[in-house]
Image 1 (cartoon, helix red, strand yellow):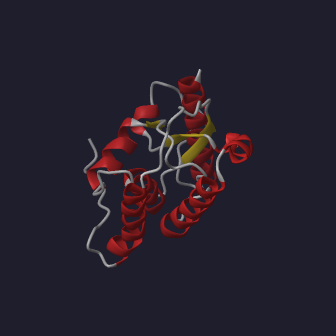
Image 2 (tube, rainbow, N blue to C red; image 1 turned 90 degrees about the vertical axis):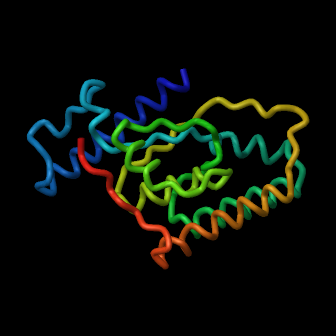
Length: 175
């Protein structure tokens, strides 16, 4: 059910982009029609999100977890420019072409890689849809302070590395 939601939201984002392109004179006459046959050749990402569960989670989590969560979300939005509210949810769906473009440019391989992929998608103008998913918090889940600090440093490194051109976004050749 969650995969179907991600696919539906990805198709919707692709249709919206195709219609925008058509209105701007960049698209084909059938730009509003996006189906499973041609979706792989388009650029698009769908991100599963637990943000719709945030109100319930805030009530159940300890205060320090909520503070750390809000601080991390603020850092992600400031450093990546994304409007995605939940970058760390494990559900991601990419069109084949988007995956090729994004993963060819990815540098980070730990927890910050999600944020980097969304940063690259924004730089390339790839549409990203956020889709609510069902989520169950596992009992005994613990915050690792060193892991969180490392992830925070990775997130801060993203705009720095790209703005100084230490890392560059390159489009792979069309196939």
